Amino acid sequence: MPKHESKQCARCNTLFECKSGSIMLCQCQTVVLSTEQLEYISEQYEDCLCSRCLLEVRGEYNRLQHTRKIRALSKS
Image 1 (cartoon, rainbow, N blue to C red):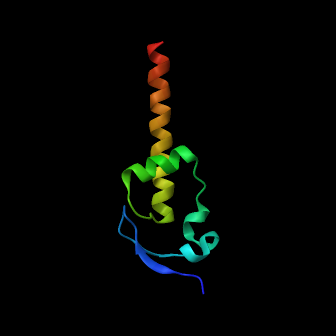
Image 2: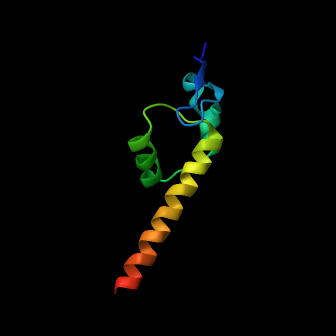
């Protein structure tokens, strides 16, 4: 039987069901993340995030990268 457990989001404390035993059915699989975005998240949080927070942190990462590119362009 696949392992499912209740988890609390490390960012917002919302409870959600983690389906690590059936990872393709887990709520986190609904959010597409690049390797860089995953690294950014894992640097800040030690445990799982709910899908809503994954989306928000992905957007935060994207905005940060955009800002860095704009600053780099303005310096050249």
